[in-house]
Length: 464
Image (cartoon, rainbow, N blue to C red):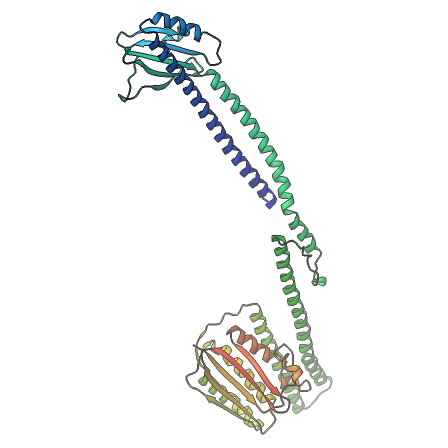
């Protein structure tokens, strides 16, 4: 079921329910008021004739003659009157159709000694319209024990109520018809902005992601929806731009080592060579393959982080012990290059993170520092505890980073020294991986550098 159909059903259902409730309330109120008017009419007539009987006492025959003349006159609601003696069980006076005499009850009792009237309804005929009766004592002083009863046949009242039912039913059916038409119109008008948005979105393709929805000046929900969709389109466009750039850069970075590997192997196969030459070619090819493997692994890790498919387990990580292990691992390569790697700082600095990812983070920073520091230099790692964070600084005396590259150094495939071979300088993914790992740990990474004087990378991680 579409939203348009649901809105139509809701509009019609609400209006139909409201109409039924209103019609029922109107009918019940009208019926109640009409019955109250009948009872008031009965009470007024019986009181009037009771006073007349008291005034003509004890001559009831004269009272009967006057009552008959009065009541036999044409009335919309004819009144029947009966004067009854319960002791003798006989009618002293009855004005009305003779066949109705038996309808009037002969057995009745007042519930309360102070009660002076009883209203009741007696069914009459096959239609059962009913006779509304009022029973009251005539006068305990002048006519002790006598009871006066007045009755009104309810046929005309019931016919009126039936006509009212028909009128309300027809009005209700017509109202539901108008509700359907109005609901359809309102549903179409309400959803027209959505149709316009869909039409505009259908015109946006991958080659024109810069297009945006038009935003009206009205401050309503549709404006908020269009604004939200435009923000989403901006994020989508930015993601597509980064994906395209990443794809192009990855293809460029992978093409060069693959071409070099292909060329080496092709040259080696052109003619028969010595064992040493084959060994050298295979060693170079292996180095290129290892560089390609590192690049592909780094790309895979970045892709998983971007897709939020990497869910590492966090625990308490002692940074001093972790960095001491990295010093031993990279110390050999640093010594071969004539560099000195040192780790200093507080032993009780414990971070909340994943040990494997933190090992890769600081390993990349130390490896970069060693790569870009000339022989005779040094790489210093310091650890400090600052309030609720652990700060790790990796400082080198290397070539430094140009000021124009410091804002881009954490982007993918950005390298400080483009002249260095990729197997020596990397593919430019290490610092981007570092930033992704730091973001995953809800930390921060910054760099301070001067060309020719070295760089300092500072990582701040939440402490455990």
